[in-house]
Image (cartoon, rainbow, N blue to C red; front, side):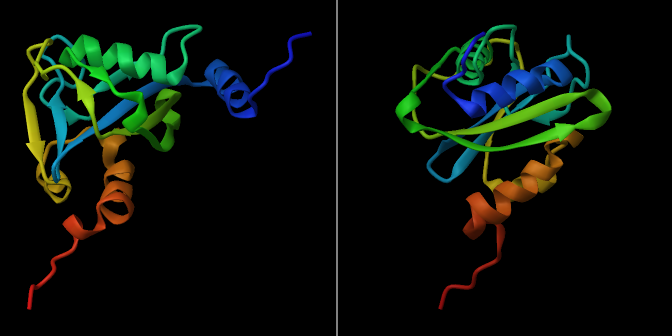
Length: 156
């Protein structure tokens, strides 16, 4: 019998059997966040999303996130400035999408998959052609993580 030290990891292991785990990263620099277009070689090309990808078998979420971000952007995440934000299940595709916030990384960001990269204010997400799977997260991001960039404030 195998004993699990971490109930959360145990839950993710069970969930992985039902859903495909996918990780995504909100890279924040100053007041802006990074979004990337889907490459022409992948489904939904032309749509924008947060960088990330599929978790491989026997891989932890953070390991997958670091690997995917390195493959797509050529950087390594600073784990001391990495925060788990939220997760959503996309029932029709059997996907469990996990979002992280990263405030610091190592290296210079490059578009290794020839994708378009945009640094935008969080409230500009409404003007981007985001994947439908990111819609709920966009609302969460603007209302709870960056609320002052979402509302119109008048300086007096």
